[in-house]
Image (spheres, rainbow, N blue to C red):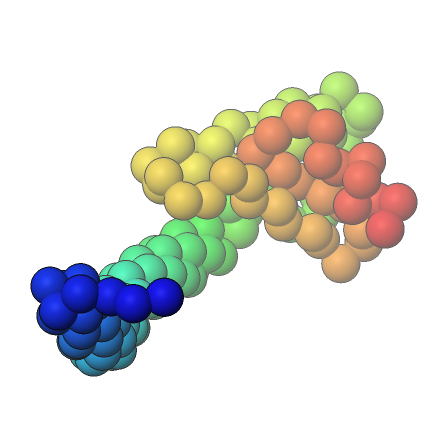
Length: 137
């Protein structure tokens, strides 16, 4: 099949244009992909750093709350085993300790439960229902 000169020039121009577009597209793609990967790594590193800082603050706050609970005179006096208590007195003693623990937890947005276990296995908790779980385990 014979092609006239106009068709040959058009075909040659089309081939050169298509090849140059494909090559420039691949070069730009590789360049942009590298930039996007680098930016994603920087963004994720910044997010991880922020999350790490938040977790450190939460951990420090939890440690401070635990220290406050352990050094609180009222909690220490109430959690001591008092001999010869009636069942009713023991119940109200537990209730007072649980109420005191609730006050510590209300002031903190990160801690949900505070549990104190005495040497004799008696458990004090700010939320009802957890004592049985920890007694079993």
